[in-house]
Image 1: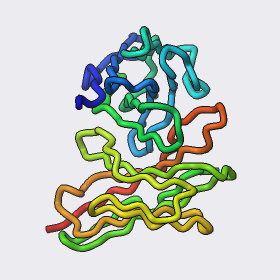
Image 2: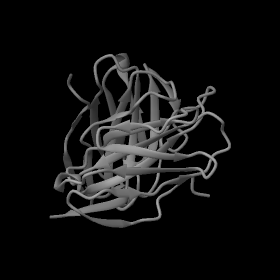
Image 3: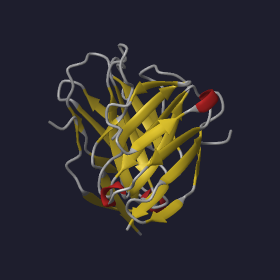
Image 4: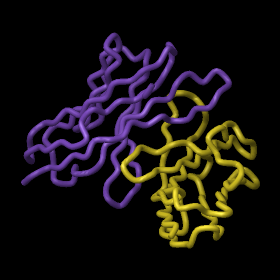
Length: 115
Length: 117
Protein backbone atom coordinates (compact mmCIF):
# COMPACT_ATOMS: atom_id res chain seq x y z
CA UNK A 1 0.00 0.00 0.00
CA UNK A 2 1.44 3.36 -1.01
CA UNK A 3 2.03 5.85 1.80
CA UNK A 4 1.30 9.56 1.97
CA UNK A 5 3.08 11.40 -0.83
CA UNK A 6 4.31 14.97 -0.61
CA UNK A 7 6.12 17.31 -2.95
CA UNK A 8 8.41 19.07 -3.16
CA UNK A 9 10.72 17.61 -0.54
CA UNK A 10 12.73 20.82 -0.20
CA UNK A 11 12.04 24.44 -1.03
CA UNK A 12 14.08 27.60 -0.55
CA UNK A 13 12.41 30.96 -1.13
CA UNK A 14 12.90 34.55 -0.17
CA UNK A 15 10.58 36.32 2.24
CA UNK A 16 7.46 37.80 0.68
CA UNK A 17 7.48 35.14 -2.05
CA UNK A 18 4.73 32.55 -2.35
CA UNK A 19 5.05 28.77 -2.16
CA UNK A 20 2.73 25.79 -2.50
CA UNK A 21 2.96 22.25 -1.17
CA UNK A 22 1.11 19.22 -2.46
CA UNK A 23 -0.11 16.13 -0.63
CA UNK A 24 -1.64 12.88 -1.83
CA UNK A 25 -3.05 10.84 1.07
CA UNK A 26 -3.28 7.08 1.39
CA UNK A 27 -5.98 5.74 -0.89
CA UNK A 28 -9.35 5.64 0.85
CA UNK A 29 -8.38 7.91 3.71
CA UNK A 30 -11.11 10.47 4.25
CA UNK A 31 -9.29 12.64 6.76
CA UNK A 32 -6.28 14.75 5.85
CA UNK A 33 -4.12 16.92 8.10
CA UNK A 34 -1.44 19.53 7.56
CA UNK A 35 1.06 20.02 10.38
CA UNK A 36 3.87 22.54 10.79
CA UNK A 37 7.02 21.39 12.59
CA UNK A 38 9.45 24.11 13.60
CA UNK A 39 12.99 22.98 14.39
CA UNK A 40 13.25 21.52 17.88
CA UNK A 41 9.49 21.19 18.39
CA UNK A 42 6.77 18.65 17.81
CA UNK A 43 4.37 19.08 14.90
CA UNK A 44 1.47 21.50 15.29
CA UNK A 45 -1.80 21.11 13.40
CA UNK A 46 -2.55 23.80 10.84
CA UNK A 47 -5.70 22.40 9.24
CA UNK A 48 -7.78 19.23 9.14
CA UNK A 49 -10.06 18.15 6.29
CA UNK A 50 -12.80 15.56 6.31
CA UNK A 51 -13.34 14.75 2.64
CA UNK A 52 -13.72 18.22 1.09
CA UNK A 53 -14.73 20.05 4.24
CA UNK A 54 -12.61 21.80 6.85
CA UNK A 55 -12.92 20.36 10.37
CA UNK A 56 -10.36 22.52 12.17
CA UNK A 57 -8.34 25.48 10.92
CA UNK A 58 -8.12 27.34 14.21
CA UNK A 59 -4.32 27.48 14.13
CA UNK A 60 -3.94 28.36 10.47
CA UNK A 61 -2.63 31.93 9.97
CA UNK A 62 -5.34 32.78 7.51
CA UNK A 63 -3.85 36.11 6.48
CA UNK A 64 -1.08 34.25 4.67
CA UNK A 65 -1.85 30.53 4.67
CA UNK A 66 -4.54 28.81 2.64
CA UNK A 67 -5.35 25.20 1.94
CA UNK A 68 -7.78 23.29 -0.17
CA UNK A 69 -8.73 19.70 -0.80
CA UNK A 70 -10.46 19.32 -4.10
CA UNK A 71 -12.53 16.19 -4.77
CA UNK A 72 -11.69 14.89 -1.31
CA UNK A 73 -8.31 13.46 -2.32
CA UNK A 74 -5.23 15.61 -2.98
CA UNK A 75 -4.57 18.74 -1.00
CA UNK A 76 -2.54 21.90 -1.51
CA UNK A 77 -1.18 24.20 1.20
CA UNK A 78 -0.12 27.68 0.13
CA UNK A 79 1.81 30.44 1.86
CA UNK A 80 1.59 33.95 0.44
CA UNK A 81 3.58 35.99 1.34
CA UNK A 82 6.11 33.93 3.26
CA UNK A 83 7.83 35.20 6.38
CA UNK A 84 11.12 34.13 7.93
CA UNK A 85 9.28 32.37 10.77
CA UNK A 86 7.54 30.09 8.27
CA UNK A 87 10.77 28.13 7.91
CA UNK A 88 9.76 24.66 9.05
CA UNK A 89 8.89 21.18 7.91
CA UNK A 90 5.34 20.87 6.61
CA UNK A 91 3.92 17.42 7.23
CA UNK A 92 0.83 15.98 5.64
CA UNK A 93 -0.96 13.09 7.34
CA UNK A 94 -4.05 11.06 6.62
CA UNK A 95 -6.30 8.68 8.49
CA UNK A 96 -9.13 6.38 7.54
CA UNK A 97 -11.65 8.21 9.69
CA UNK A 98 -12.12 10.31 12.76
CA UNK A 99 -12.37 7.80 15.57
CA UNK A 100 -9.98 8.35 18.46
CA UNK A 101 -8.26 5.08 17.68
CA UNK A 102 -7.52 5.97 14.06
CA UNK A 103 -3.83 6.20 13.39
CA UNK A 104 -2.56 9.17 11.43
CA UNK A 105 0.03 8.23 8.83
CA UNK A 106 2.52 10.89 7.84
CA UNK A 107 4.26 11.72 4.61
CA UNK A 108 7.97 12.53 4.31
CA UNK A 109 7.36 16.27 4.72
CA UNK A 110 8.44 19.37 2.84
CA UNK A 111 11.36 21.30 4.33
CA UNK A 112 10.87 25.03 3.72
CA UNK A 113 13.60 27.60 4.22
CA UNK A 114 12.64 31.26 3.96
CA UNK A 115 15.59 33.62 3.49
CA UNK B 1 -0.18 24.54 30.15
CA UNK B 2 1.51 21.87 28.10
CA UNK B 3 -0.68 18.93 27.29
CA UNK B 4 2.19 16.57 26.54
CA UNK B 5 5.45 16.73 28.46
CA UNK B 6 8.58 14.86 27.48
CA UNK B 7 11.20 15.72 30.09
CA UNK B 8 14.18 14.01 28.44
CA UNK B 9 15.62 16.09 25.60
CA UNK B 10 18.17 13.36 24.90
CA UNK B 11 18.78 9.76 25.93
CA UNK B 12 21.67 7.37 25.32
CA UNK B 13 21.50 3.59 25.40
CA UNK B 14 23.84 0.76 24.57
CA UNK B 15 22.91 -1.54 21.73
CA UNK B 16 20.82 -4.54 22.88
CA UNK B 17 19.78 -2.84 26.12
CA UNK B 18 16.28 -1.60 26.98
CA UNK B 19 15.39 2.07 27.28
CA UNK B 20 12.37 3.96 28.62
CA UNK B 21 11.26 7.29 27.17
CA UNK B 22 9.04 9.32 29.46
CA UNK B 23 5.76 11.01 28.58
CA UNK B 24 3.20 12.66 30.82
CA UNK B 25 -0.04 14.19 29.62
CA UNK B 26 -2.74 16.52 30.81
CA UNK B 27 -6.40 16.18 29.88
CA UNK B 28 -9.81 16.40 31.50
CA UNK B 29 -11.38 14.12 28.89
CA UNK B 30 -12.28 10.55 29.83
CA UNK B 31 -11.79 9.34 26.29
CA UNK B 32 -8.45 9.95 24.65
CA UNK B 33 -5.71 8.19 22.77
CA UNK B 34 -1.96 8.23 23.20
CA UNK B 35 0.49 7.66 20.35
CA UNK B 36 4.22 7.33 19.96
CA UNK B 37 5.95 8.26 16.73
CA UNK B 38 9.55 7.88 15.62
CA UNK B 39 11.15 10.54 13.44
CA UNK B 40 14.50 9.61 11.87
CA UNK B 41 16.73 12.25 10.34
CA UNK B 42 14.89 11.78 7.04
CA UNK B 43 11.96 13.60 8.62
CA UNK B 44 9.08 11.17 8.22
CA UNK B 45 6.92 10.49 11.28
CA UNK B 46 6.62 6.72 11.75
CA UNK B 47 3.78 5.40 13.89
CA UNK B 48 4.98 3.01 16.61
CA UNK B 49 2.25 2.26 19.12
CA UNK B 50 -1.18 3.34 20.37
CA UNK B 51 -2.86 3.21 23.79
CA UNK B 52 -6.51 4.04 24.34
CA UNK B 53 -7.65 5.55 27.61
CA UNK B 54 -10.07 2.68 28.18
CA UNK B 55 -7.62 -0.06 27.26
CA UNK B 56 -6.99 -2.17 30.33
CA UNK B 57 -3.80 -3.75 29.11
CA UNK B 58 -0.59 -2.00 28.13
CA UNK B 59 -0.09 -1.88 24.38
CA UNK B 60 2.75 -3.85 22.80
CA UNK B 61 4.07 -3.90 19.23
CA UNK B 62 7.12 -6.05 18.73
CA UNK B 63 10.02 -4.47 20.62
CA UNK B 64 7.87 -1.51 21.66
CA UNK B 65 5.64 -1.48 24.69
CA UNK B 66 3.78 1.28 26.42
CA UNK B 67 3.82 1.57 30.21
CA UNK B 68 0.43 3.22 30.74
CA UNK B 69 -0.30 4.54 34.22
CA UNK B 70 -3.63 6.31 33.96
CA UNK B 71 -3.76 7.68 37.50
CA UNK B 72 -0.35 9.26 37.06
CA UNK B 73 -1.20 10.37 33.52
CA UNK B 74 1.93 8.84 32.13
CA UNK B 75 2.50 6.82 28.96
CA UNK B 76 6.14 5.84 28.80
CA UNK B 77 7.57 4.06 25.77
CA UNK B 78 9.80 1.06 26.43
CA UNK B 79 12.09 -0.13 23.66
CA UNK B 80 13.61 -3.53 24.33
CA UNK B 81 16.84 -4.80 22.78
CA UNK B 82 17.82 -1.45 21.25
CA UNK B 83 19.25 -1.45 17.74
CA UNK B 84 21.43 1.13 16.00
CA UNK B 85 18.50 1.91 13.71
CA UNK B 86 16.47 3.05 16.71
CA UNK B 87 18.50 6.26 16.88
CA UNK B 88 15.95 8.99 16.13
CA UNK B 89 13.61 11.55 17.67
CA UNK B 90 10.66 10.06 19.51
CA UNK B 91 7.43 11.97 19.97
CA UNK B 92 4.56 11.29 22.33
CA UNK B 93 1.19 12.59 21.16
CA UNK B 94 -2.37 12.69 22.44
CA UNK B 95 -5.71 12.89 20.75
CA UNK B 96 -8.58 13.95 22.96
CA UNK B 97 -12.27 13.09 22.74
CA UNK B 98 -13.95 13.37 19.38
CA UNK B 99 -17.27 14.92 20.36
CA UNK B 100 -17.67 16.94 17.20
CA UNK B 101 -14.30 18.57 17.51
CA UNK B 102 -10.93 18.22 15.90
CA UNK B 103 -9.07 14.97 16.13
CA UNK B 104 -5.75 16.71 16.01
CA UNK B 105 -2.72 15.16 17.60
CA UNK B 106 -1.01 17.30 20.22
CA UNK B 107 2.68 16.48 20.33
CA UNK B 108 5.37 16.80 22.95
CA UNK B 109 8.75 18.33 22.17
CA UNK B 110 10.35 14.96 21.63
CA UNK B 111 13.28 12.95 22.97
CA UNK B 112 16.37 12.31 20.89
CA UNK B 113 17.51 8.72 21.37
CA UNK B 114 21.04 7.70 20.49
CA UNK B 115 21.94 4.02 20.45
CA UNK B 116 25.65 3.37 20.94
CA UNK B 117 27.37 0.26 19.53
